[in-house]
Length: 322
Image (cartoon, rainbow, N blue to C red; front, side, top):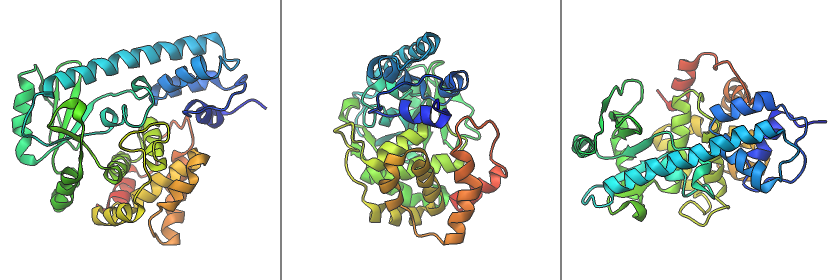
């Protein structure tokens, strides 16, 4: 039997894909979907260099490889420009989150993880000052409504989101803890840091929940690697989760339901991640777990899903404690 969409996704989203034929996979459906989900660069590399083509039509390999090359060039441009801007910046504490933090710490090659924008967490008092600093590099304000960011800036090529009260005005103390625990990213100079592992997990979960799980599936790869200890790397996230610390922090942030939902999705999508994901499940009531499984986890775990979740606003409120 030829592989289905989920089987194809699992093989091509692996850092150690099993060798074999993918003849007859649903390529017409997979290619466009994979590109839209940020999965194409890793899939292209696996087909070209790890699987020897895997009996895949040439047009599939050519199209995915073009995306891979474009992702590599775009990531290098964004990250090198950012380094040049902030390398000599002194006396700040800027926490680089999301794709720009993950590309070098979770993925064996920077091209595998497209960086669509830069996300930075900082003290509220530092937002205007850093925005002014960016204005010296041709970054201008953009509309920040609906983004959750305090400010958004762009130079026409790169979007930079500046966050301060990322957990909401009622949890500023917890947000300050993220800044305090963050670890240096020396490659970007003395003012740039990355979130501690448990904070990186919860920030990823929080973003997924706030978007009602209408996120690129690349976000689930990020979470898979964070939860399983980034075994393909030897970097800051290549270690086991401190589960008690994770669960205590999830309770403080009031994101226990979101944490369960995201981990349950990871367990469904990636069989190899089941032990690590389920070990970090928060202690929710059985009825709550069954409701989340039925209304969110199941529907979100279907690849190629075209329709949004029903009651999206209710889902967001349910999962983020609002």
